[in-house]
Image (cartoon, rainbow, N blue to C red):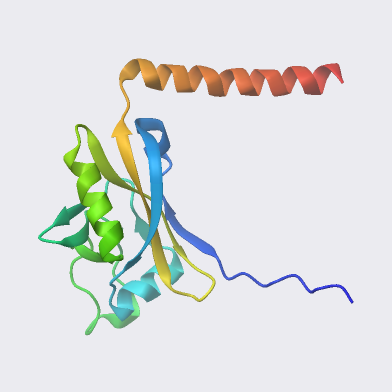
Length: 159
């Protein structure tokens, strides 16, 4: 008897597409995020943005700064008050020390890539240890991408 396909509840809430263009991603890591109930409901509706946010290690804790989660209108009285407040990120101590060591190196930063609901329905954030690209690196990436598109067109037209 064939296995039934597994139902996945994986849903992307916010994505930072610009991060892969601006930064050279070395390693990524999945972390949890501490949220209030109204913030989770707002995320389920899809009202968030992590494009201008960043993560940092401060006093032995991992924090997400400048991430936008819109107010949830039905929760006016007991909802969250500040859309861009700092939010604590959850990871293991070993991972935290690795992140702290990476940020101490020259030019390394912690960039959020994607915020999503995992299969269990919990909000997760994928952050990356990244190094900023120079202008010539960005041009090289763009040239590779354009050549890949052109190659696909040639193969499609000639076959």
